[in-house]
Length: 483
Ligand code: NAD
Image 1: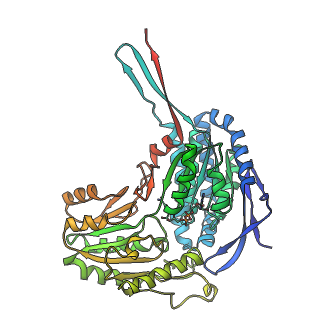
Image 2: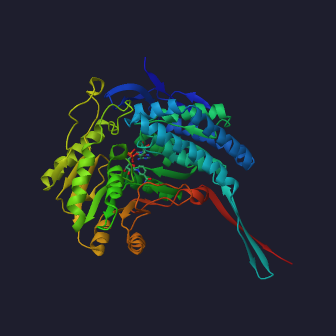
Image 3: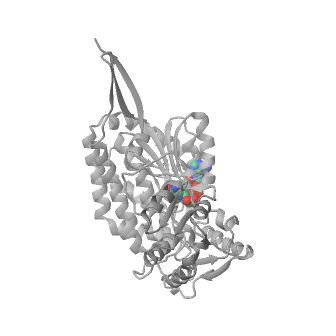
């Protein structure tokens, strides 16, 4: 009997109203290993009612007590790090080492950061001559709907849960149906930490059924969504007529610009990381690399050499650097784009198909080699559409203006990296790139205090730091006449 993952509603595990479960696959072996509640509008209704009932008390709980509870949740995840890391690895196919050293510790940090950030919040006071005082109150918004994707399952879920709850909201979370296991473990951590029943509810299931019911529920005031641009468009259309407060963190097609004066070793290291970390399944992955012409040949040779050395294998093996892709769908999509790249005139310099050697256990898993493609024009589909797999294209550029034009030449604007030793150029180019985050001589150095989000089709709104606390708060001005 495989484990069935139930919903977490009102502090208890509850079977879905329809009694149905979706298959949950272990992508490293290509087999079902658990079932996940296939929830519908009835389950969402129940979860929203529980969140609504818990709101008055939780929002009136002193901030330092809310902070203490969220800290306890962080401590429990940290104590159970191995259990969470294994769950994320088996659900998602990512190397266990990555889950253990990056994703789960970052989820712990989310809770600690937002719990303490709350204690340092300031409020504004504006004085109008001797006539009036205006002060600004920030209050929790009520029941928040939190919808997250499968690529960094616990990290992106807690990135929403922690600030929403810290501010005093209650929430209904809908994790990705593809990777539900860490959310299931989070429910246990919340109970053990003493989070009052109903403050966080977790409804599992498909986006079109459970997710859509959450977005359209009239009692859900606020929607924070991370996922694909197409889904974001559907959610925006459903939420807009109800005037819900909405944050959308969407897809990316992020450029890495390498100037000829850059430290080539560091640029290659960071660009390989940016292209293939988590099998290329991070929204911030640098999937288009542009290199200044004089450095192009050397960069490509070193990049390909380093890519070939990446070890693809069983995610449970500590030596593995590239695990399985999350699902058969994602694997097929990646293969189709590699085929498309060949038809569009691209030359595959490395990878391009399944790995040659895999342990027997992983024979039916969803593996794809890290793949490097050159000779593709910037406007082709492979250079314009988000693949979300281990595929990178490399092309030369002639000068700074050319580099900026290439970087900005897609409908996305999530992040970018610039590699140069010229500090003036670094600032100039960072300013000119249309992206929510620009890294200079690095990739994915994250600071939870800075605003995070995308430009153009990569999103609406900003999360992170104060922005998150403000997003999850209602702002009210009070004007008091003096004298
Ligand atoms: P997805 O859009 O398919 O699903 C994301 C979540 O939305 C899932 O929980 C899904 O069940 C739910 N959903 C799907 N349809 C829905 C609907 N109609 N109504 C409500 N909910 C719905 O995305 P995915 O495949 O899980 O994740 C990959 C995508 O996420 C990529 O495009 C990636 O770039 C993006 N992403 C963005 C960021 C960011 O911060 N900008 C971070 C990580 C991932």
